Image 1: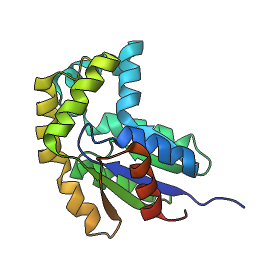
Image 2: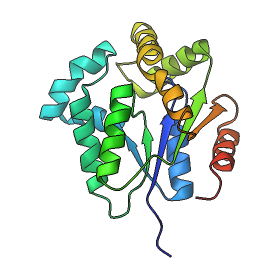
Image 3: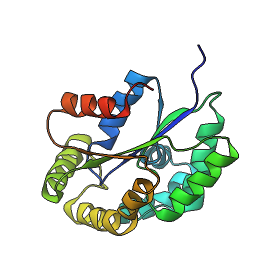
Image 4: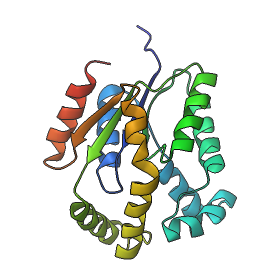
Length: 192
């Protein structure tokens, strides 16, 4: 049986567990995880032209310009015969959400569901500092982390209302055992 296209977005502040849960849900449901952060960090590591452009932006904790992000997303979607994807960390702004809607419409797709993971701020800071130590991520020092959380609050939190109004938003707590969070997400999404 051929599977239908499916577009899922994971929303939440840095350190909420979006990447972890997106990878787990992608594996369980047979979806491709598209993480703009992972793609951008790979370009920085490899020293590509894109990597050279975005490295200073990321080091400051600012958002990478929409046109660069959307070009990456378009390329990733075009690689797939039947797009069944999870966006991890995208969109991050209302403008990106609207641009994604236009791109998806162009490709005959739509956002099927948005999972919002909520985690208290101090828990986020603790998680991100731990991740910085474990993974050696230079973009995760306390000053940059707090800046990223402020940017999230200002730029990304408005998407909660944007997707809630469309009836596709599911809000879950991002604290507790990882397996339990995964099971809650899968239960909320139902059989896809």
